[in-house]
Amino acid sequence: MRTRTRFAPSPTGFMHIGNLRTAIFEYLVAKHDDGDFILRVEDTDQNRKVEGAIDFIYNTLNLCKMEISEGPNNEGEYGPYIQSERVHLYKQYAEELVKMGKAYYCFCSEDVLGEMRAEADRRKKPFMYDGRCSRLSQEQIEAKINNGEKYVIRQKMPKEGTSVVHDLVYGDIKVDNNVLEDQILLKSDGYPTYNFANVIDDHLMKITHVIRGNEYLSQTPKYNLLYEAFGWEAPTYIHVPMVLGEDGNKLSKRNGDASFMDLYNEGYLPEAVVNYLVLLGWSPETNQEIYTMDELIKAFDAKRISKSPSSYDIKKLRWFNAKYIKNLSDEDYLKFVKPFLTYDVSDKSEEWVNKLLLIYKDHLSYGNEINELVGIFFNDEINISRENQEFLNSDENIPLVISAYKNELSNITEWNVENIAEVINKVKEKTGIKGKLLYMPMRIKISGVEHGPELPDEIYLIGKDKVIDRLK
Image (tube, rainbow, N blue to C red; front, side, top):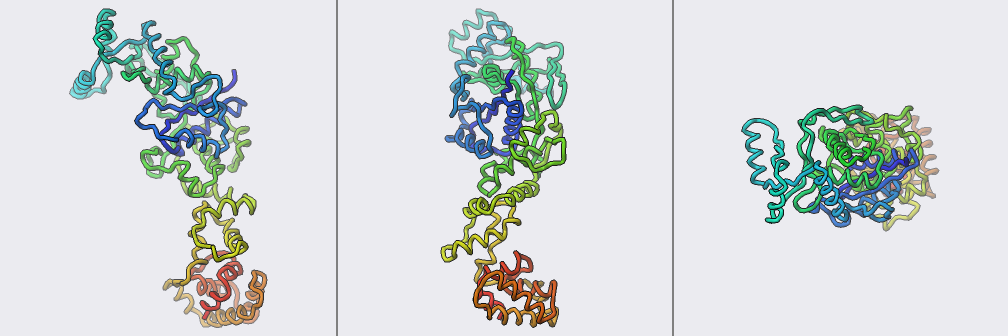
């Protein structure tokens, strides 16, 4: 059987990275077996729907080089791929379960359900619907429907025995049937619940592997009972551990955690984000850390997914991103980083701008960081900290070094990095000073800080007139 996985997000805006990681796992499971990766949009909660969200999802997956085999914008033979366009199917299958005696009409109003919940609270027990409507006679049911009473359709759960779910990551999970509530399949507005729609869609779309967060593990027995009720074969389940934020809570758009597009707009390369997220909860057989997508597809084994939650670490993501930036060609790097530069460079030559950006290629961890790094080249005034001023006053040779720099740099007729590097060597020879006392006084005087790019590059980019003025 051909492997088919599905990514089924809600169209509620940008994709947060925990959700993206699940999509990556689903993609790799499918492509490792040369199978299909399906996009299905679960928009049954119409109140949360965001206009244009489907395009956001496509854009994100395309940026991450995850090719969608079938979906709303490239339909195959199992569409439609938007749940709100499949409502007639859910009603049909729900009614079929009623006829089979495995589901029933429930007419309990919110007031009645509220009384049940209050009673459960008084008894200090968790609320569970008592199944009273399952005992209505056919005549009672028909009378209520004819009277226009609103109803939902509930699944009739077994009350004895146990249900067993086999999961590729967590093994066999046993659940006592008496703790399974008669879940709602079809709501009073005709829309299906999440659990029911998933089962119907996964079966009709021939999904072979269901990959999702382990918070849904407890719901899986209900899924299996639906498969059993219809006489369908259940898919292979792969539940993946949560991704936790730095505060220890699950990453979520609702909690304000970063979405993929937030990262992308800050200058994180999609390939780096994918590489980092794969290794949150999955371990390869080797110690390799940097992977291309093709390498991930070849190496991915779902059995190596961890059971334990993973912590999202922005510092580690930046490490990955820096590696990917460093491996860009100079041409691709300049195309990538230039849009992030917010300083006015209208009076600068293209050669100067390219030189400025390239000296930070090996030091940049994300695109927008470039503005933090290059500020010294755009500030008309510099501020020397008390600590650095104390350093400049700490040795009697420092004024001699600065004076030598000023004289030698003033004599340069062609202002370029090579001639500036030669000046540094001349100052070293004339003063006999080397190491920290040779470089740091110069850096501090021209930029205000003790660290920066290679000194000849820094001097060149600041410019001759400004450098000489600051040395005075």
